[in-house]
Length: 208
Image 1 (cartoon, rainbow, N blue to C red):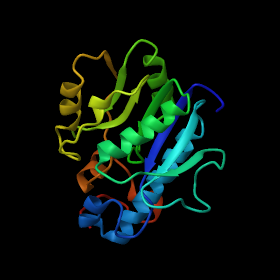
Image 2: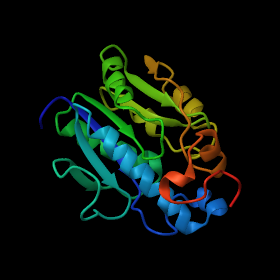
Image 3: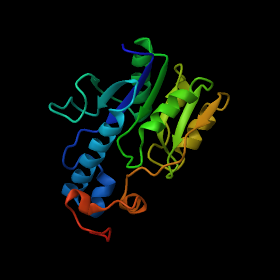
């Protein structure tokens, strides 16, 4: 352990047909995989500049020759619903003696290193910190001790996830980062003004 802060990254393995499935409904599986690989690399670039320790939790298996620094912890998510997977990751982090722990996914084109730094700063005086997503979920969650209520099962991937989580932990002191747009659907990609030509696809965001 290098310091007291740990950033957990939940990353789906970039396997054709198993990632960005909602995006694939419009782009097709191959193009959706290209977009996802771009998101993965972007996230890795941002995370590489953070001062915290980093643990990458893969969905199914640990990738060889991946885009992540070899000094990071590399682990596999446990079985169960998303809440259980996240809880087990946080529990491992706190049992490993980290004092402040944050978790992100790999779906955010607008993620910046300062977002990660700010989240750890906010945990100095708050029990929980959230990065709200425009779709009603969250792109980041952080805590300075394990709060079991944050991981209760709920309607994951819906527009009520953040609100339900806040209600579950309503007695806790909570801080928020700026709201951002994560990339789950074709409409999300449009809102981001992302140019598909950057990754060798169409030059505009008309439906493909």
